[in-house]
Image 1 (cartoon, rainbow, N blue to C red):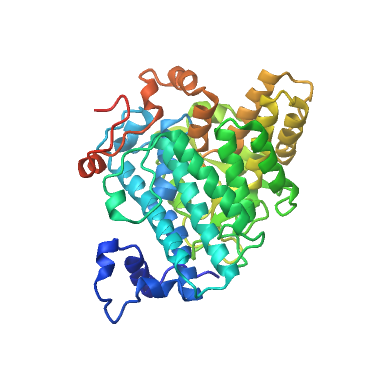
Image 2: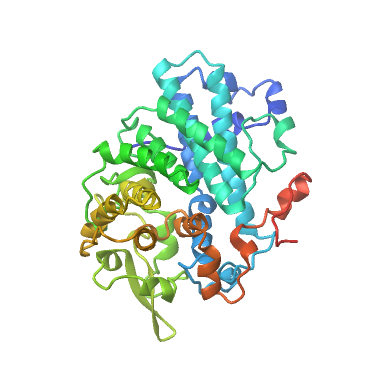
Length: 450
């Protein structure tokens, strides 16, 4: 079992991620000099493991994906203070978005600190140094993918030098994606195919390639998306598919990467599942629930009904544990899974008018869902619609996938304006947090926000 965080390593990370000017003073006797961390395999490993811990924070891994679901067409809310997300009326002073922004940049800063530390370290084996470097660039790429899809142009930071980071302007989306793709290509070369801890909680080569497939799809690079997704699928490490009830369990077969939690439950489980005799604050929209085929096993496995105000609503039930799990039923937060790779490849195939192979990939998921196979004679545009629907039914509430997908397909305005009378196209991006702009006058604001 990986031990992500102890008091000892809290002190370690505080020291590692200090600004350069603070490391010039003599280290207290109860702390470890930064240069020593990357000369010791256990300490260096702990520093990288902490990146995952930071990514699993309440705002980065939980609140931001819930916000994505509400600003899209997945989730509604009974939390009156969060109706601003459902109504796409977010202010630049929004506290959860500020916290999410900062938590993500905290991971990026930590990844940069790891890379700088490893660059000057000679105390690790070559194999271990490659693995840790690969994980650090993977984590940086993951965070930037989230940032550009929520905020558009963002500061691109590849150093811990406060003189370069404190007043960094926003970098264009294309340049950020260039860095993401470069990092993921590099990570795929550095990382081993096996899992370094024995559990699927640290990125391996297939995680890097799977994320690269997602990125290439988002960029419209269809051929590259097919190549990358095919590598992961053809590895055989994550197939065949398993019943929906078991997908989100610890180290499940389809999991490519998960975030570990000692108690065996997730923040998303706590957020979506009602307490005993209560209700969920984040029900699915009526539009989303009506999109399910009545025979779809995913509806039965991944949603649950509850009563509120005399009416029936549904909440997400992908994670079953609201509190600590019994042995054998532990759940880890899913980051990447094999089903998405079939959807990536299907969408890319459809864009290239190879509808036969696109439908074949969709039918793999439909068979698991208990749905009849689709005909492979469907025309291109109809095939793309089927891919979108299948993706919606498979990946709902997972890391903002629906919000990002609607932006990728160019259908965001069409879908949102039909469901939300007050929709404005400028809501496709969130506001840059005002508090960050106050600290850094070089940060411009997104259109539509004051």
